[in-house]
Length: 262
Ligand SMILES: NC(=O)c1ccc[n+]([C@@H]2O[C@H](COP(=O)([O-])OP(=O)(O)OC[C@H]3O[C@@H](n4cnc5c(N)ncnc54)[C@H](O)[C@@H]3O)[C@@H](O)[C@H]2O)c1
Image 1 (tube, rainbow, N blue to C red):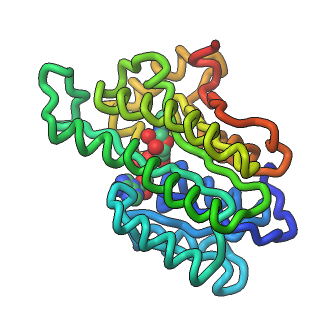
Image 2 (cartoon, protein in one colour):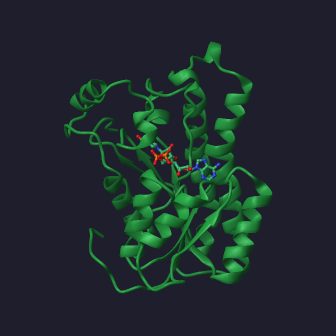
Image 3 (cartoon, rainbow, N blue to C red):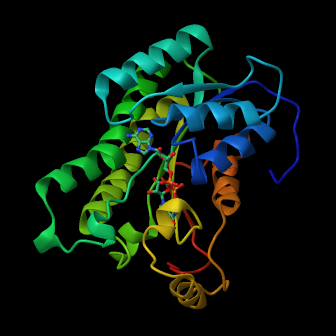
């Protein structure tokens, strides 16, 4: 599961938000573990670049551009992917947003309904839409070792003080939805789990800090003494989608350096 290159087994993984950050690292890790990867992102240029950088012969990995919060776009993407490439075995819902109006975390009293709706659409509705599209198709055409991995956040677990109430609310919804999907898909042998990252060094995190000093101060509060890397998170996803994780479902793996211990 580390940086090895396994023999391709060809199971298909669809990774949303695969164009950069954690999603990009997940694509690289799953490709190294033998998955055939569809890199999906609203930024088609980034998705294409990530897919091309995965190596392998042309036509093995793919990219798709679509908005995970758009019902018609999600259904069309699944029809297209399953029709032209094959059944999705592992769905990894990484795409998410943290709105910071004016570069600041907004307090509830200052939050617009529009920001609330947008945050829920991209972080939570997306998981419902992609999860539903996957489960409908797996009921009709089962796969071995079916997997869904969603993305929560330490913010939802702690009532996070670096992020907004809209984000905390939406990520909390994802955690509940993960359990509901786990229960409803267990009869198919499909497992559904969530990864809850702590502070991970990506564009999203850097959008919440004003200086590198602030980041160093945050790291000092983490038992393992550092901000996490995208590779730290990708390793947890790699495990959850593997055959070895067959008896784990409805669960959350915290990847936070001990920032929150339960
Ligand atoms: N970075 C952290 O510290 C941290 C902590 C906790 C949770 N998370 C979660 O991990 C996931 C990845 O975060 P990241 O830091 O890599 O973020 P990021 O902003 O670097 O990357 C997110 C990706 O999602 C894509 N995306 C955004 N909206 C989309 C949409 N509507 N449709 C399709 N794609 C869309 C973006 O284009 C981007 O490529 C997110 O769900 C985030 O909430 C991150």
